[in-house]
Image (cartoon, rainbow, N blue to C red; front, side):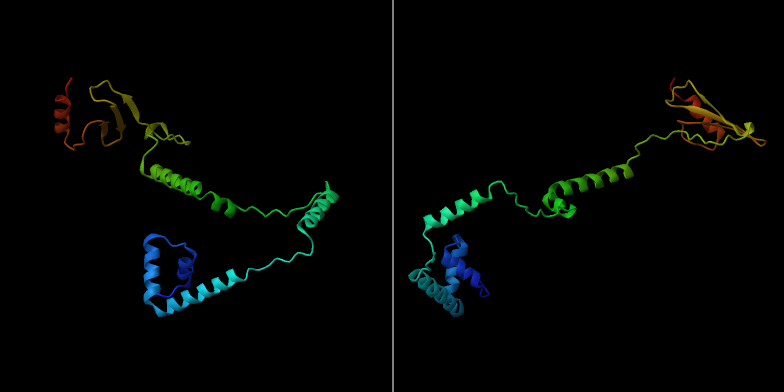
Length: 186
């Protein structure tokens, strides 16, 4: 106990301190003159209060007092008493349900994180509302190949025809592409 705390001295006198805290407080009071003087002064006040207990002065006897209370209750009978109700705000509800509020907040954060990090919807072709001219259409055909999920697209232009087959690694060399097709396990 490095500082002089009168609450600890009071706790020592009241018997509220137990174990090591009681031992440390008693040791400090025995070695510190300031806390020892506070201990003696509080002990003296307690002794004086015990020697002179306060006397409650009632003008009526207890039986007469309770008879007046009963009479007043009977006189009022069914009379309603308006008791003001405190307003219950959202902040009050949050304070009463701190665990539920924290749990809900964590759940929302986790769900937002999951939706941001995980691609929930698989990629699909996007259909636009405007229809391009017939010359710009590409024909996509499902192929019967040993490569799963394979589709081929051809794009005709004046310069070249491009055929793209999904499921194969990209190579710019057509001969290497032919070799990859030939080496597929059938």
